[in-house]
Image (cartoon, rainbow, N blue to C red; front, side, top):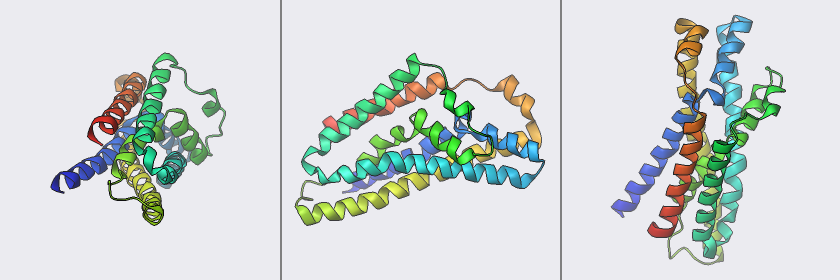
Length: 223
């Protein structure tokens, strides 16, 4: 029992850590928040931009997690679903390693539509997929949780958990990205980005492969 609680706690920390990681990555949008504040010359514009980015990111996480929460009806296939999800995350990471170009559609979205941009950026970069193996680990089904009624209860709980995971992840992402945006906007300036920032695309792709691999391993050997 203590080991199970420790494992669940570790998975929740993974949700938060992945949010911080996404927030630090400029590809998730904090430079757009800085840009919006500089263009409008209002501090409130920075907060509003971060809120719009958070809303889009949250919706992207829910769009990915909800289908997997509904799949809980397939109790007998839980291990296969978790392995398949891990393989899907690995495939996305490998694809991003091969294809380094950013989706052109992101450049065609008007700068004021930050929520839409954030949603599409998270989907295109596989941000939601990174959460799937962690989320499925949190929602792991106990051997005695069988039967139609038990499955309905599990699905209801897991839908709630999907929203909780998305909220915790988005909050940590917004906090991390917001702190960087505030530092850049008020103190460091845009020149700091061009001189000191490094490209995270390869690290991002490799992290997807790593998370997917852990998901497959734990699904097959630890379940």
